[in-house]
Image 1 (spheres, rainbow, N blue to C red):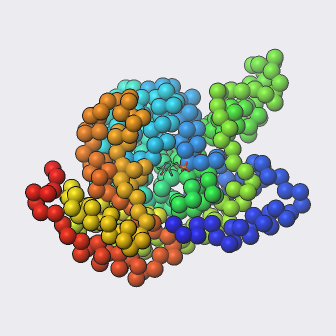
Image 2 (image 1 turned 90 degrees about the horizontal axis):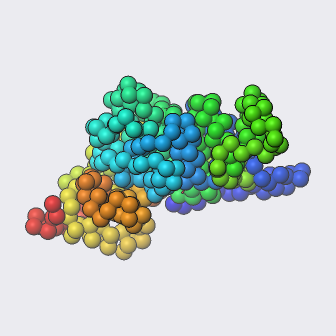
Image 3 (image 1 turned 90 degrees about the vertical axis):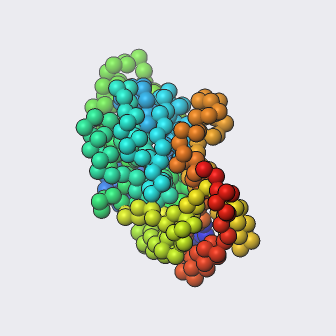
Length: 393
Ligand SMILES: Cc1ncc(COP(=O)(O)O)c(C=O)c1O
């Protein structure tokens, strides 16, 4: 990533600070950023928080308050906080493998894992690829299972022309430095559900009822608890996940450039995938509606020779990359899940495991020159492959 916080964003902060006695803690700019974000996304309500991980946590907490405890279906290829939030809120995570063409949850696997205990499907749109299809949406709707979308890596991506994050009961976004847009650190919970919106607002601020916008809701609490000051009624054992006016000023400034930047990113990924050797690398991702802040490089075969060659060549050419794509690969290989589910659980998810060892991503920023992308492809396409007996099965 280069220059994700631009001069214009810094100038906006300076102007704000030079203003008349600016209030820095959460106030008008946070509210306006939430409204502008809701308009951009196409939802009724949004709540700005201090990170994407906080958005995950508060969303799972709100799901628990709305639906009670049970199972939540999650992917093994996601960020740690998607699984941590499920565990921390007391749900049982139920894993399903991914589809290698979308890097998101495999639809058949999700539908197969639904039980009477399922309280939600917490799906991640990985690195800008849309993970939704109509069969999944219809299947969940028919069974009344809420969908929660993690769009932290996919701002602006669409399904059937509609933005991701507008299909589920709730959606999460991250404004971490390397993502499509940044507030330095930050995240958003978006929803069309008014009751959940009120719950999420309270969860963001210690579970305090005064954070709700609904007067009847606040009134019902003070009537029920006359021994409490209406200023200090804590409805839930919650968190402080608020952000500040400075972060919101940066977010509002960044949002103005998001669509233009995203168009460049879409062109960059198309060019990259068109010029990659499809014999060596996966080039047949489902790119309809995708919007990626990273170029995805996934080996076609489990070939350790090519894999080592890729890493060596990228390092030699000073190309920054991450191995394992989203969250470093198969979460079931991580210590926190090995302790919980045992040493062998990861073997049940071969697609996530393939990405774990043979998947990479490389930054895709708006100013990335076309020549660099073409040069990268021609360098990758020349790398020697392993012989058939080197390739692991
Ligand atoms: C899919 C996904 N969810 C959640 C997060 C957490 O976001 P943050 O880094 O803003 O806490 C990330 C990470 O960056 C992510 O990639």
